[in-house]
Structure formats: C-alpha cells, structure tokens
Image (cartoon, rainbow, N blue to C red; front, side, top):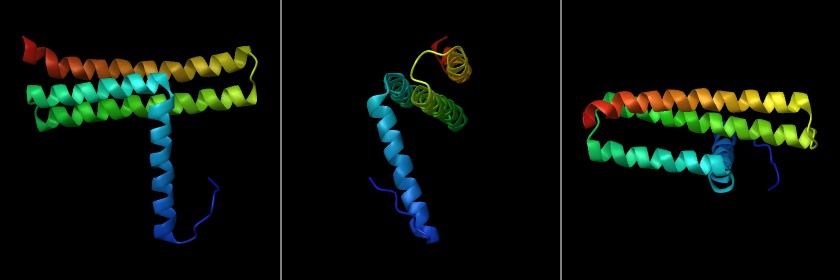
Length: 124
C-alpha cells in the first residue's frame, strides 16, 4: 500500500479514515491482547442489551470499552516502535514498554469499575 498525499480536504480526510479503519482491523486481527479486549467489549455490549441498561450506562460502558481499546492500540504501537528501534533487550526499552502496559492496566481497571457500577446493582 503506497502512500499518496491527497491535498484536497475531503479526499484527505477520507483517506485518513480509511487508514484508521485498516489500522483498527490490523489491531483486532493480529494482536492477541486486542482480540481479547475486543471480545470482552462485544460480550459487554451483548450483556448491556440483555440487562437493558440505561442510556447513561451505555455511554459509560461505551467510553470504558473505547478507552481500553485505544490504550491497547497505543501500547501495541509503542511496543512495535521500541522493538523496531532496539530489537535486543534493553533496560530502558523495557521500562518504556512497562509504562505503556501500565497505562493499559489503568484503563482496564477503570473499565472494570464502570462495569461493576453498572452491573452489580442489577444482579443484587
């Protein structure tokens, strides 16, 4: 896929959306952690329909899923860049990758909290 700069406003935006969509597909189809998070997100969506959550709960759940998926994507990008720049183990690269993984951890813990706030009262 060759990069072609499109100087028109609409054409450039459409190409940006196309590349973003292709990147999302690559993430979902090639990265195991993203596959897991995507599957959990689908499961939570199904659970939301089954439990008939409110509009506000849908918003909270959607943002939580989006936060985790976004952070997983950024973490993957950081790991790929780090591995490209320095393929052998390096303490500083490991530190950078650990920090990126920690950001995903914070997002996942936030999503779990949101899920608990939404669903625990429905099961009690």
